[in-house]
Image 1: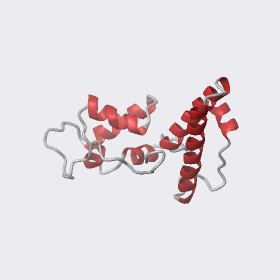
Image 2 (image 1 turned 45 degrees about the vertical axis):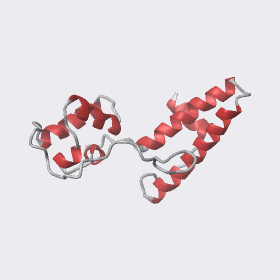
Image 3 (image 1 turned 120 degrees about the horizontal axis):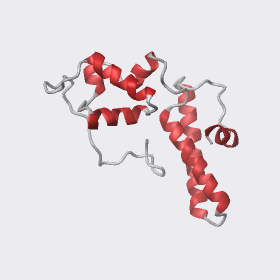
Image 4 (image 1 turned 60 degrees about the vertical axis):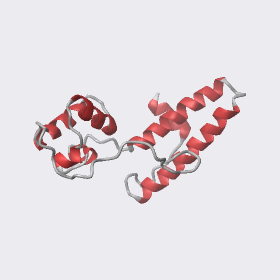
Length: 151
């Protein structure tokens, strides 16, 4: 995701390796990596967390070079992917927690501004996902109703 104010991505951060070949030191085959992804998804991990666990615990640098599929494609084929995209769900959870904070601290204007920016970002992202057909066109975002579902 982009920055909150400027929508730029920033300069720092890791980059993917340029080589698209499977390194010789990887001991897992494509089927084994897919099974690991499925096992971690059934344990309740998100796709980004699955990638981190595979990298840190299993030494798999990039799932796509080994399996020729992304993690979300593997989960979608097995119908383990959530109907709401991961980044949108994270923003919704953040919005709910900030709204709870504002209800108990009414004078916190900085938090109110952050809440407004987060809601704006949620609405922009919903528009994108509706155009990309990752959300149904008739899907509505109601902060009160969705807060009840996530609590």
